[in-house]
Image 1 (cartoon, rainbow over the protein chains, first blue to last red):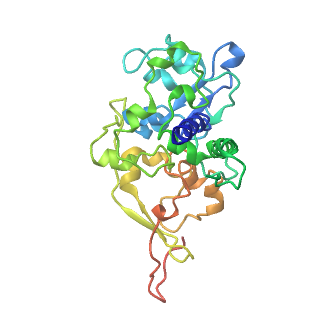
Image 2: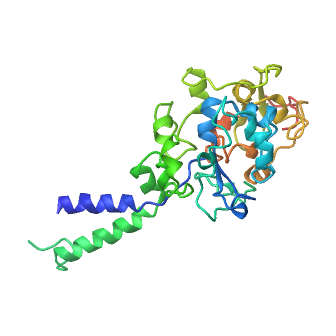
Image 3: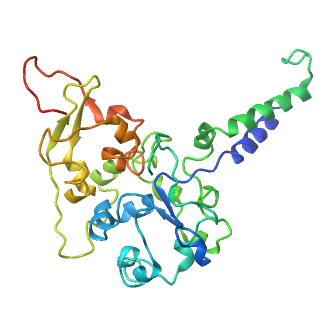
Length: 122
Length: 192
């Protein structure tokens, strides 16, 4: 009985709801229309390496999901993500799948869990 | 021995237990029990079919080494402590000409509200952010010139641009409302 309980508990945990990491942002204004997976941008991954001000001041990313019109041509020309994703500071734009890693069909917004569940413009 | 479920038999007990566990599994509490940080392939937004997924760093691998915040709060990492303890040293700039500005002044807000006073620390904010990220479009630099509203903050404006989205969530009331109301009677204080 005890073993069955532990097994069932394991099964239940495996079925726990999936939840994106806090601050994960999906960019899908253009990606999927152009035949690519949506981009997943993880704040946690980036803030270990860069302070907020690098992207939100030096690079000019607006602090509002959906407010940044990022095109691959800009990235290739060293703007937005391209200031770092150039093969020198971070991987280059030719490593498509590392950024275009989202599930097809995702909408552009902050997906991370633990939001305040307010009406929200995130 | 009779089952505790009043003669239904042990086999029904197992099914009831399974049903209860399945219901429990749908709650966020179960997600916390299951794993403090979900693997990328199970987070619901990364495509598990993407072959490049295994090259990306897993949140658990990176975040489990940093000072912890409560389970279920933000990334479950205390990011300010991570900086203060030197556990991470994220770059402050890419362009050499960028001026790094850190201000060490606390501002008291909400001085006459029904909730505790907010002691806003510039230091912790400017370690991460530049002045221009908040001034002057979100907040005027002049003391008393800003009209704060929890309603607007909860809608993702003012402090809510970050808190509730990328910085610790608005459910942690006491982290901002951290100082008891004790303004001396009759003393004029700037509007909060």
